[in-house]
Image 1 (cartoon, rainbow, N blue to C red):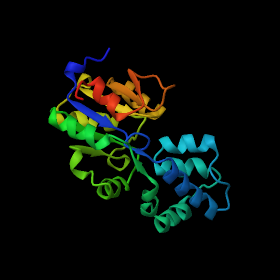
Image 2: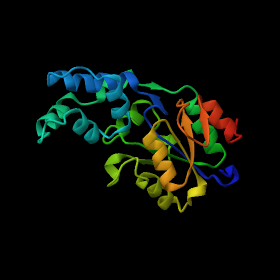
Image 3: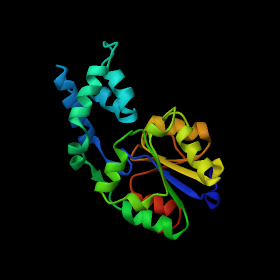
Length: 210
């Protein structure tokens, strides 16, 4: 049972929580697959790459290749910047982040994105809304490993019962469980969690800050 009175930090996953990135990620990986003569993502592939780092997704999508250098070279040419326009910031996000700050909460991000998170925050003018952002590029073991959450704990001298993590995938659930932090599943009703919500306003309600 999570004791909300102890919570000092609220940490968000990016894709599927801060942003609806389904269209952007699908277009990105479909373009990569098309270049190498592969079919677009099927639904199972889409669900899996949504949770993975880019490195993990490419290995998963190109299992027949022993050397993925040619794919990574192509990724550098494609880039991700042109796909950001297809991302949709979740309704109520800025209000929630503002209210969290007013009530003294540390705001963090733990994401399996690697080198695109900085651009995303800059384009959507969210750079000042988070005290710490941890990407897959900053850890040895990305989610589902708990390393990202533990890095945030170490930075601010927090214990597990002082963090609330919000995610939408089983990788997020596993990371929360492994680090013993409270977990809110966002728009993922079948995901085991302390709470399941469909909006930012519901998160504010759980914390009693709205």
